[in-house]
Image (tube, rainbow, N blue to C red; front, side, top):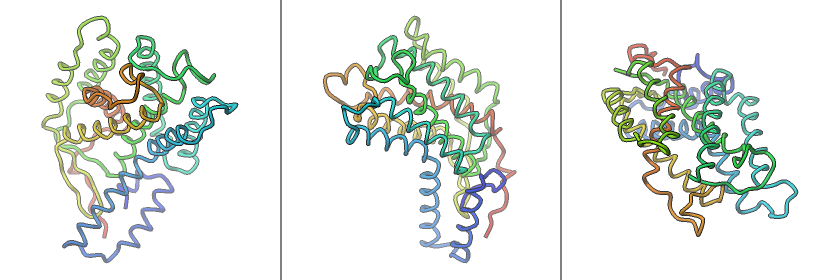
Length: 293
């Protein structure tokens, strides 16, 4: 059910073999074939999101059921849960060691930004617990790691290929500019719209090919970026509603996160895309293996 078997973990290869046995002989055309492709696509997406989904469940559970008088502070409990999720991802072969490098790097870059943003008052966490750096609880870095986890997992689960992908050095320069702008716009001009234009300029011709089950589909890459940013924004609304962190306008009572944050998430996601390209160099569609029956 998954992508190129050479890129799968041991557990995923076992799932892949079971899926092929289950789906062998199914119709290749018609409504049944379409339903199978849709179901496989949704299952792959769910499998790719497992890190973020588990962390989001933990955040929601801590709002509803974690006792206020517990010996372990809520933020510390979330940090412990996040560490256990990461360990479980490795122990149960849901992530490879190769992917862990991207996840750790995105974790570090995210935590560094959290330290700065909380210091300038962009958002705030509850001042509780000991597992934190300054005003930033350590579980916050795992929220960035969850985005990185999704990116690297979806890359191999769908065996992604790209036509007219921009040069990696050029995307790295733009990603570095995006990261610097998250800090520098507090002191000088905010260049997010310039950076957004550069992203569009670099990727507007890029087409992504992705394997579902038997079908290999193609789609322009920029709308995919926008769609992922939209889902992250939805998760952010859930996280702030659960009180994991709050923006200044939410301190008097929760309200929807500003849609302008979609641009911020879109640009932040570009950083993770570029990091993934360092580990999984973009491959051309001509190298796609033939579908297996």
